[in-house]
Length: 176
Length: 244
Image (cartoon, rainbow over all chains, first blue to last red; front, side, top):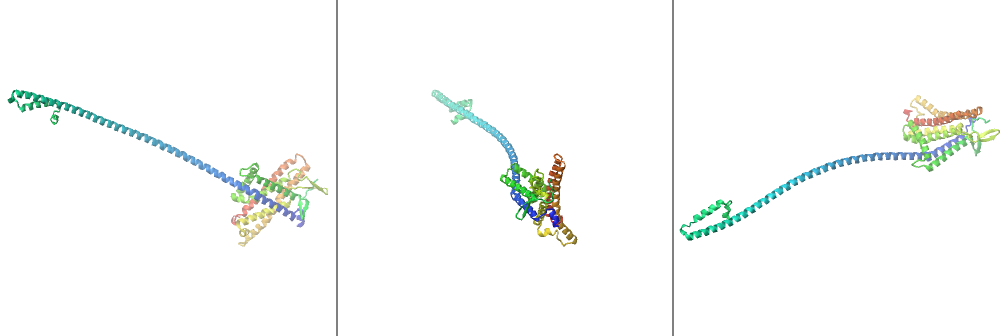
């Protein structure tokens, strides 16, 4: 057996040296090459995954923002339309109101003007009536001084009544 | 004319330890790999340079291959050091013999050329040491994964005579694995070395070229087989008995 081992060149010292050599190499490579390399590769994979996820999220956020933008624009457009239409309605209402007010004001002005004119007319008439009354009285006085028995109050009234029936709104004459 | 020896030639002794040309080559290869590691380590960065990229590519490819066997990236990363180191070291030691001058530069002793370097995998000491480490590594990982008792109950059980017998055969096969691992690698690389030598002497110049390519391929395949078998044995060993 030992002859065979010798022929094959197997020597436990050499075997041990080779084993130690390999184990040292294994240890060095494990601690200084594989582990740091694997760590770096793992970190890089994680970072890339994180980046990918971040990009996806960003895309999602952008899409959401786009949606919100569209919604807001649509809402703003709707609001603007409703504001415009309500403003138009309001303006129309105000216009009608103004027209109504103007009409009523003009009516009032017209009425007032008519009143003033009427009052002035009545004043003129009453002064005219007073003048006439005075004239009649003077005439009657003159007549009575000529023939007092013939003078009668009734006659005077009749004359006044006649005058009154000939003048419109003569009812006021008695109030003045 | 160089002589062909199965044994590696002893070129010097350090104290009681003999140093053969294959051991020297082993030291040289591991020295170069360690140097490369420290060179890499200095330049290791989050954003890789060319060299780091190359290493990462190799590691990533090995991991992918391991994933296909272990089906779990975490397990792959756990067993990567042993499998990858075996692969890279065996590959380097297989290809070392193909570099011109490696088997030719040496000194003459009693009219016989003793080369300074000899591919380590053409020396049984190297292959047996590596095979033993691989097999012990497999069992070590199995003990770590399953526990001492559970793992060794695969080999030694009294549940039923058939299982006991099969367990003993399994236990013996662990040692046979060392032999098959080591002799397969040794045989292939040693044969390749002899083949290249003979072809080179019989028909020099152009004819050996295809054989060189063949040896490059065989060197890769043998390293691959060694690493993959270790991986498969690990994958089988770290699983509970029912799946075994």
